[in-house]
Length: 217
Image 1 (cartoon, one colour):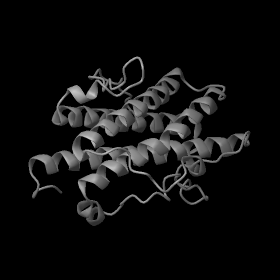
Image 2 (image 1 turned 120 degrees about the vertical axis):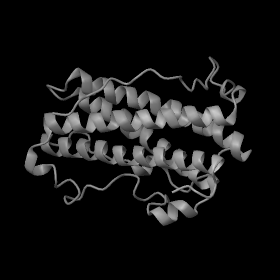
Image 3 (image 1 turned 180 degrees about the vertical axis):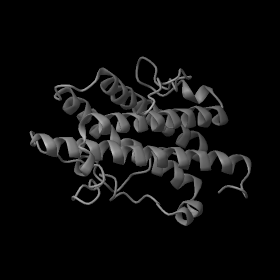
Image 4 (image 1 turned 180 degrees about the horizontal axis):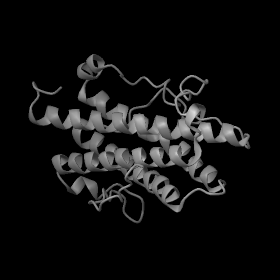
């Protein structure tokens, strides 16, 4: 049985004012903002791991746990131009590290919102799972705000126009049969966990480059 920890309290990114402007984050230093963004990413990854384990224990029959990668289930972010090998990651610029994180964050906002609605339809979804996925959904939006401000601070530029359509990444049937639905949701959670780990890794590499440029593995 996996130990499920409660998300610890942490300093919110708190970038948005009432009017929705990003005027609060710019008042803190770039270094502190990067630390807060990393803390967000770490917690999002940890809670996504817990959610995935909990979902697996509750809903996925054991023989199917190893099959999700062989049954035509592919991760929705597979088509994004994001480095995957260690050597590729080492070679990309700080700018692309940040924009890769932003692309990943933005491409998961809609699927996680969808996951909330689909989990609500499960008869016996535990409250803890619903709370964790809801928490991750909300924190992902905060992370997006923090990364956008970080891009402005570090790169002195606005948004980079990306070549993918967010709507095109995520497609789903309205009411699939139950096992199909379970496996699709399981794939979503598993893929998100993998991408959340990437976000954390990219941000930590960025932090390392700020402090010790030549010794970042």
